Image (cartoon, rainbow, N blue to C red; front, top):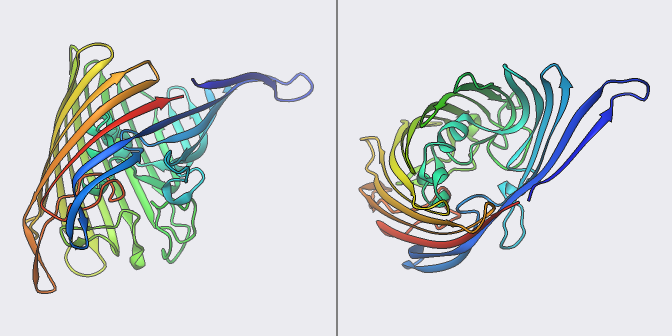
Length: 386
């Protein structure tokens, strides 16, 4: 249960106006057991059974608050910590408030202006509304390969962000993340080290419309890594190394429609990687899915994603996700989710032909490469909100 402290406090000792303030403590813990039929080993691949948390939703606790300044103006703040429920360690590179940390002002009918570590609009508008990962407990197993399109965990340090008010269903916004350096050398913007000197710069903007059963949104995010700063999401995908980038830019569009007890959605993202030297590469993700509520407590979802590198590189991935969720209460649910991925294509590395491998999950830390071209994952978990 959310714990809310509300108090009317005097702004001065003698006849000052009163401001209404509130502070809320909130959180979520997600934990479960995952099985994968193939995980890469030094000799090929093997089965894996593991405890895992933060899959359906990232485990977190946070504090948020507002102060009414009068005339429709409010001060606001959010401090949100990510952690592992398995061993109690901090997430997001060990940052105390690695998920979010910002303060700002909001005005009724205008919007909010906030400063700090915040989500990009790719995550806010597309990832949070039009994906299997956000609409079902498939979560991070359903987001696209290694989250290269920034749909689930694109957090920008040192950011100034404007988010409009809701105008008959329409919202829009823009943000800029400062590098805090003239050289741009050092810790990248998206790592857990909040406010680190030498961070890369970033900007993002987007718009979303949601009215009645229909919703549609679009967003663009650009992250610059001059001098070869390695992004936190740097991985080798189909033997194309995304470490040492000069620039990563991603555009996405998504839509959804509610029909009685059902919901259908689709999205497309286009991501471009520009290295310090050589040609750029591109990755496209196409996703469709749906969810149906059989009862107020029981729902199920099914989704399909096709991912493809541009024609200069061979790499294709087909992935199917399914999830069943049962709510024990408004704050607690149990779920089962499964995913199957098949990869195809091969590339030449140091004169040797290497096949493209399957890898389910928005981060290698969840499962990792299959060491083969197919991978199956299933999970049972419990999630509690407070």
